[in-house]
Amino acid sequence: MSHAAASPAPAGLHLTGLHLTIATRESRLALWQAEHVKALLESLGHTVTLLGMTTRGDQILDRTLSKVGGKGLFVKELETALEEGRADLAVHSLKDVPMELPAGFALACVMDREDPRDAWVSPHCAGLADLPPGAVVGTSSLRRLVLLREALAALGRSDVRIEPLRGNLDTRLRKLDEGQYQAIVLAAAGLKRLGLGERIRQIFEPTAMLPAAGQGALGIEICSHRDDVRAALAPLAHWPTWLSVAAERAVSRALGGSCSMPLAAFSRWESDQTLHIDAAWGEELRAVPLIRANAQASVNTLAEAEALGQRVAAALCAAGAQVAVPTPAASQP
Image 1 (cartoon, rainbow, N blue to C red):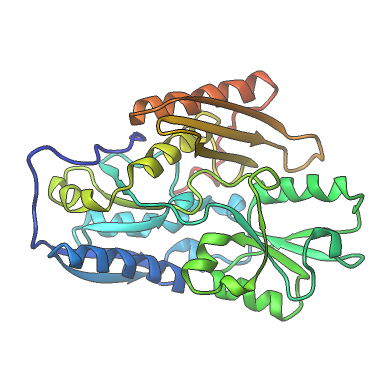
Image 2: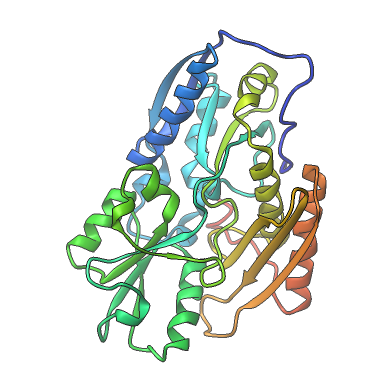
């Protein structure tokens, strides 16, 4: 299994005028992301078309991702299109990309990050403290579940229920507007990218709701032998973001992380070359205090970023966090 990010700029390859096909999910947000990459590549002289696909993750909406195979369900069909030559690259929300890529695939580009934070969306409640008795809050994430549970406990709100919320962004907002939930928590990046920033009532600072590894960043996957595509993507890469998410993903990888584990990891630059990372681990079924750890280091390479993430993961484990054991569902393609 390959997990290291690819070199951002293959030596000696500076190609223009390629004919490229982007594999993408067909949700409105996924198509926005693919169109964004398409426009950037076309500005560099390439010809680009989109191949829209429906993934198993889009089809299975009656169960949580942690119960049916994890976020890899959103990328498997796109990887098949790459492998079969029907597409040259796939654009992903990086938080949806499994920590281990199958052999023969590479993360060839990480782009400049949008807002990595979580957003509180509610038609009537400005925040957690405003929820009515017996309110229901929706989230698709075990990470958000344990963080919300901790925040609600601090407010003495044992009456509030946190319920699963699946579907694409528009579906989730519709369920909120229909009154199925009093509030939902979503990634701010998706709302902002689709021009829905006005739906945000509150942005959670990372100190209150630590983001998921890679949240807000776009990653581009290719077949690892496609140096021509890697070279075409090199101008789109944002090195500070790539280093940040490499550290975050290293935390998750070291703990066997997937959507079946309540795990958060978020990096920020404190100076030109000092990367600080915070991480938190929790338990879905028990309301126990979260285990937290942080570290910082001078980081210039992907190897140094991953080493920093591994250091934080080791600190979490030393404090009692447990490495996840893959379940049959989580190991399915």
